[in-house]
Length: 171
Image (cartoon, rainbow, N blue to C red):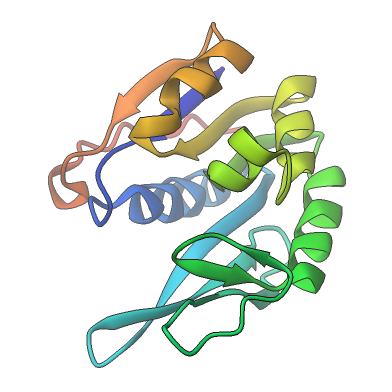
């Protein structure tokens, strides 16, 4: 089963993935994949860290672009990405399956429009070597993801604090 998790920025998509990973691990599932964790300073999102759900290793993935940022390497209008962390993330995703729960937070414009970034995530999801895959996709890229995985369920996150949590079956 593939679930495409979508919603507005700040709606709690990553929070939903974190909580589901915790519950699945508590039920004995093998949980693998990557989370993109926001890094805040005084209420401002300044960076994004990548977290390997299997090992717990965390690395800086991206820094916010500012007017004085020299755009080197892989950048979008809002972010400059660390190419070493992207390579590390692709290695994590290459070895993530087989598993019970694969989480990929998130596939964005780099992957779905430019064929860059965590491209190994697209391959990992497409192999179907898992019990469930949860893939975070921005609403504006949802149709692209649905073309890749037409059988996927779409779950809209409007407010993670109001999320109804089903129980995770024991492994």
